[in-house]
Image 1 (spheres, rainbow, N blue to C red):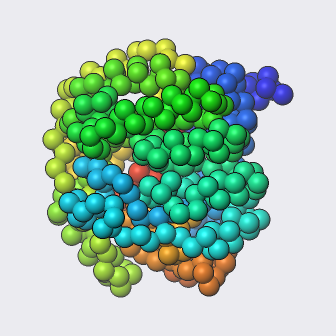
Image 2: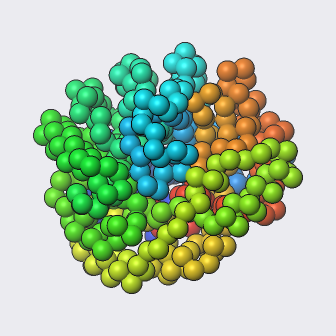
Length: 403
């Protein structure tokens, strides 16, 4: 069975960008995590079919098939105050002073037990999702329902749930670390690096099966040591590293976005304010480090949202209107984003437009509602002013060779 899956995957690596994985990564997954590889392969083929549907019917009145992915914000609580976080309006406040809003567990059960979700993929995020008050119950529910789930976490409370996570075949972790100790802790807080590494090492000692990815946000503080960081993560037997550009924008772009949202949707947006920041990145250092990383034959996938990271990073820094190839947001026909209130929003990155409320409506009513179709029609004609700064437009780019 593994041999057949491997042959199919190798055959499709260059045939369809959506299937793209490097050969060392394929071998790594076949040997260490075959269940993860099979679920990934299954999802990639479904994604390829969805892209074909979008190309044929996106502008029509045909009902959009059920989402392939659901992204749920479990809680707005977070115990860190990272420099680049778009969700923090007051970085001086502690966790005990911030909102305790979280999704109602009864609603969460309703969402997860629907047939459409059980056959799809799930992303859990926050805030810090492991601060959700019923996180342990949720893990047990996901295991019982056999839902392939990615948890996006800062890793600082991971140690509390290793006893649950180590048994799972369906839970995958994406942990945020932004460089080696000094760089990471200057961005995320003192002591964070050692705490997260200790949890990762414990997880690897108790279970080598769980998939662990690292999301590394490229910042001025860490750009000079990207290669050494990747080398250290490979030693820890990390399965995947995402070199994640810092998402930011100017006041001018934020105001342009606000104008469009007010005019088209009669809504006053606020999310853009969390992205207004300077980004004085040393592009020469990034280029040198990235080329060193790509020259290695490490047995894992190391990738970036950009297809041409060196040139795209340079252009994004110098031109705030630059798109890294893709200008069409396929995500709006693929993934449903759900807030802590149970609202379906147009985009988790910019959750200003509320499409519908899952407390009162089912997913299909919202997914194919007049509100969602209006939003889709708007972005078909022209991307929003912030779309080139939004990760999903590149994450769900159908021409992507490596994810």
